[in-house]
Image (cartoon, rainbow, N blue to C red; front, side, top):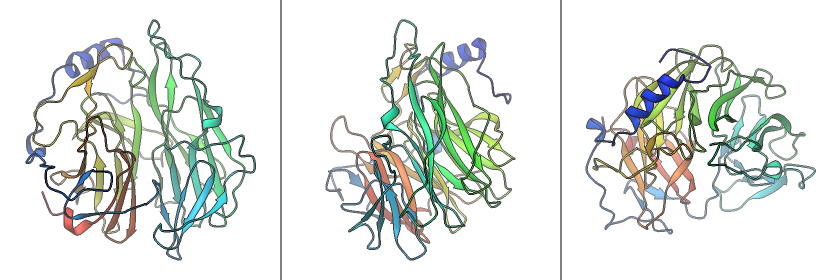
Length: 389
């Protein structure tokens, strides 16, 4: 698809609809044996987990960042939380002077910069409007859910006043990085209207989060309250270029790239990474490998999955919302090729899901994965799961 920051034309949307309304088939080399959940191990919540993983019992959801003294930091709705015993106990500090004005939603992103500043990007639940989707116009015209950032320069004990970046409905904030050049970049979303659909954008800061520059808005069209491009994850490649993967309804992640530190995004295209309509988490490990944690569009070993959408209210196309398995894969060549996916968690109860992952490399090669949906909390060693290709 030709690079553009404008919506897809009706002709392109019609072509996408014809292509992606078709049933989903097997993913070739990405398919391995079907997971047998009759044998454990299981988490306390009954989720099957890979034998080479370990449950992190009673851990918070995250996201987490490491502190230089060995501690970890996370947040909840109004507090910064710090632990020095791997999450067994927490010390809390208020994030806001006025807790009646701010409340952090669960979709959020947290980073500690190389200068030691903690930066939290979040949506403010207190200012969220009712989401009144109207099937007759395929839109929620008055939807509001603002994007904010807030900083701490003393390790999370005190926090500055939050900065409002936009008031448009923000479907989710998923990821934040610091580039080799010291640029802080986080991914956000904006709902667009007439008809309603979602778009992706980023904010970039070259002064440790004091001020922010908005990128071009990535709008590839769509019709529906779960349509468009959404919930993105990003990382810097060895070349210095930024690569961002976006959730779509089109059977795979779509990608876009930036050569100016997240200010401008171009080259929007589909990828070979088959994905459900759920977000992934894409990071560089201390080893130099890339890791992807996500929901494949089909259960492992299966050739089909029930589709939803196609009604111009959920989405304009039929799509897989498979969230029953969480998978991991690795790349040794900066994303050109990936290892065979390994399922690390699978639900065992009806109508359950394990999705919306957060990621922390607690120590070199020690990986923590938690999820917003399903309550998964586990760890594994990179060397135990990175060998399959």
